[in-house]
Length: 295
Image (cartoon, rainbow, N blue to C red; front, top):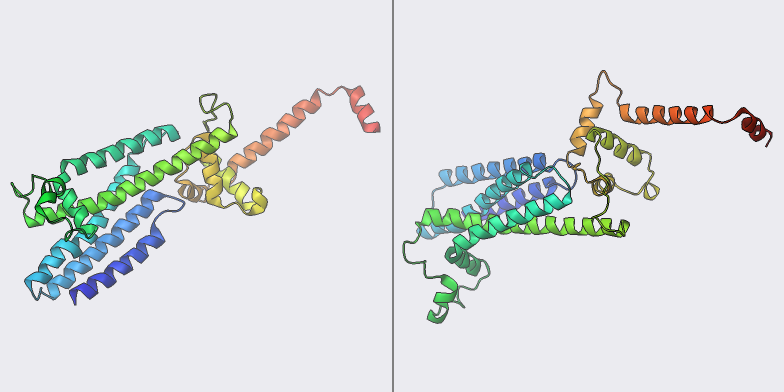
């Protein structure tokens, strides 16, 4: 009964997480939602085990070694993701790449510190326990530290949950680094002289750029209107080396403007262009104007 309940609960949780994990918008808020779903699932799991005591030692071991760590791993994973994004530096893509590499190194350093137990975890997850149990493999695969001051079962369970979370975190960091490299490669193609030359940086208010992005999107100016809002956000981020991951939240703030216009920046642009036209028209000689009018 425990196995069936936990499996159904985990599938429901995965479905919630798949619908919530960020594709565009505010990733921190969305990861917080994922964390909330995970905590709720853990509460349900704990309530179930309290109402239905274990029927055997094997069932209890399965719960502590397999079932609970899966849920705890997700909880730890989303804590780490939120912390990762909250501490990401405000800067260009180069700074983000350095930051993600440093975080990846920190994850791998943790795994290396617990290499003996991490090897056990990997052997178990890959289903190689029956293969790598001979004495000739013990020293290489199991590590000499195991068996000498081994961790208590509870601590080992928590550690294995961290291993599961850090494996997912490594995948996330590697995917982010891959995306950043692809973005930088696209920018290099657009700028044949390379990124070491002059770069464009958005130095105005970020909400002005968001207003511009939504204006382009709603008037369908790019790719015959087929470009998504996320495409335009990514494009502006690459072009101007600016962080727009909170674009949807900023647009909500724009909608809430009471005293100022909802489209203040676009109206400022309109006024500036009209002023420019008026200034240039003012310097056109009258004789040229008359001659131009005849044509």
